[in-house]
Image (cartoon, rainbow, N blue to C red; front, side):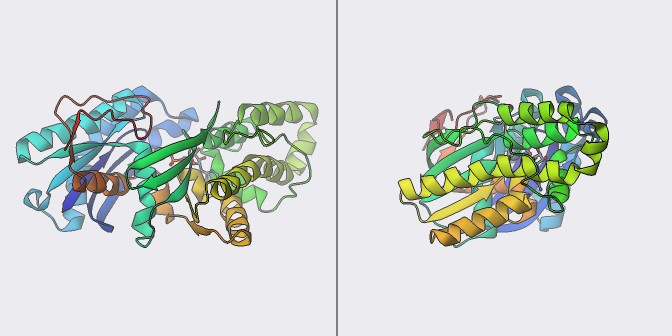
Amino acid sequence: MRVLGIETSCDETSAAVVEGNRVLSNVIASQAVHLQFGGVVPELASRAHLRKIVPIVEEALHRAGAGWEAIDAIAVTYGPGLIGALLVGLNYAKGLSLVLDKPFVGVNHLEGHIYSNFLSHPELVPPFLALLVSGGHTLLILVEDHLSYRLLGQTRDDAIGEAYDKVAKMMGLGYPGGPIIDQKARQGHADYVTFPKGLAQDESFDFSYSGLKTAVSNFLKSIAAEEQSRHINDICASFQKAAVDVLVAKTIRAARTFQVPRITVAGGVAANSYLREEMARQAKAFHLQLFVPEFQYCTDNAAMIARAGWQRLKAGFRSELSLNAFATLPLGEPVLPHAG
Ligand code: KG4
Ligand code: ZN
């Protein structure tokens, strides 16, 4: 079964053709228009998706060497995300489904991130833990079986990627801040400042990043500009340690508590070098297997949506043309109009 995937939940217009774990094409157009604003502007995102959706889907088919007739079904993100942005992809997918007379299925964006792991690691099997870390999400999920989830914890305020971006902005480092802080932190000393690790002592599997963000802001105000520029790498390393250590600690604790032998990390922040190193070190110490998708499947992309859709379609899920888009959409909720 060949699935055309479409993803437009935020600022990436993406289309892909996937057959099981095999990616035949994965085209991603990032919207440069937001750079000057230091964050995604929803209205501009919708307009950019409208301009790009048709050529991007055509390019995905072209690169896959497939015509419309070679597509068996369509998978499209219907939430969570920016409503105006989601509606562009969802409505286009509905139109294609109608015209081509092929089924379509709505996919939860978070489920897409979880399934990105299978694209890089076909040998992965449930049960496993999924740590999902991006600009919009920070979640720890127990994947009990295919399409079956138990949410163990999530952020109570900011997402971790959002904290990286905001802290980078405070220090005038540019956007998106994650890769810049990651780079600078590699040359810094993490013991320069001790920043608070949100909810580290809390027995829940929840996370919190607003306190850390405020602590960095207060610290920057307390020092001279000269000290900030001289110790910029150290401040980045100290922030990164506080942000990441708690993620690793809670993920490892969850794996041991629920006796799950495998851990996966996905989402844009999965590209973080300290998170990868620290998670790998601790997973090894506790004899847990760690899987991280290749970078191209960590950030928002349609291949992961097509892969998750493929799983749903195989299980008999189909969506109706009345399917709506949702800004918030809990994972695993039976929101799809009908199954079977
Ligand atoms: O998954 P993604 O592309 O988009 C969504 O938010 O859904 O994630 C983007 C986020 C941004 O906040 C960015 O700063 C962060 O991922 N990011 C990183 C790194 N690369 C990207 N954060 C920390 N370290 C990185 N190397
Ligand atoms: Zn995402």
